[in-house]
Structure formats: structure tokens, C-alpha cells
Length: 154
Image (cartoon, rainbow, N blue to C red; front, side, top):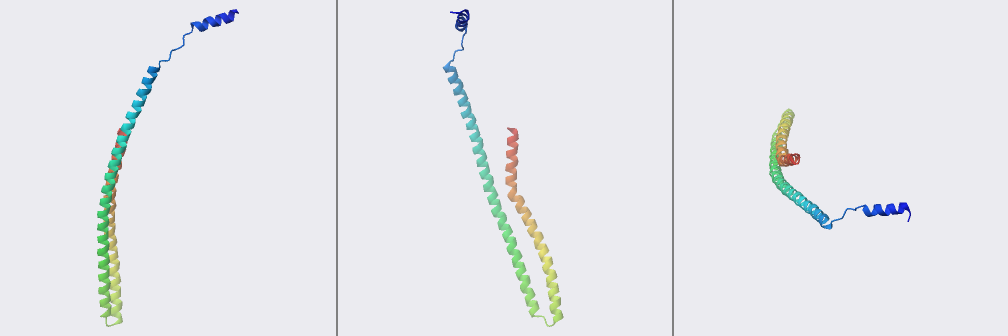
């Protein structure tokens, strides 16, 4: 044997390789898996809680929207009724007119009143619609703000 080969063989015999302990690796893998399962359970619990809260908010929003749509419908029916009554009253007045100047005066007065009524009804609808939007969006806005606060806290 040559000198280099003998030296290499001697060096190889003196080198210690780290031993692999399978039980330690198994314990580490088990701990890692258990931690992953625990984190998954926590994430699931948070997701479930969030979904339940979202369902409550949506149910509340639906009920509010239903109530508000009833208010808007009642306001629309009242406006339609007022318009129909004004139209019939005007028609009766026109039928009873004796001269052309009386018809022109009735028509002018009617149109002025109709414009004023339309402006008033538009204001009322705007008020009701604004309230409706605020009422419907309030639960969603509150839930969103809470979710953002929870995310910032986490």
C-alpha cells in the first residue's frame, strides 16, 4: 500500500460520523404535526366564529332591508295616491269650467301645484332612501369595522 492510501485509510477510521437517532426525529415530526393541528383548529374556530357572525349580520341586514323596503313602498303608494287624487280633482275642475280662460287658469294652477308636489315628494323619497341606506349598511359597516379591529389586534 502506498503512503497516501494508508494515510487516507487511517483518516477514515478516525472520522466520526454523526449518528441518526430516529426516535428524536420522530418526536420532532410529531411535535411539528401536533403544532400544525393545533394551529389548524384555532384557524377553524376563528373561521367558524367569523362565519357565524357574518350570518347574523346578513340576517339582520336582510330584516332591516325588508322593513325599509316596506317603508319605501308605503311612501311610494302614498305618493301615487296623492297624485291620482290631484289628477281626478283637476279633471273634475276642468269639466266644470265654463270658459277657456278658466280652463287655462285651472291648468296653470294645476301644473304649478304638481311641480311643487313633485319637488316635495322627491325630498321625502330622498329622506326615506337616505335613512334606508344608513339602516341597511349599519350592521355591515359595524361588522366590517370589528373584523378590521380583530385583524389589527391579531
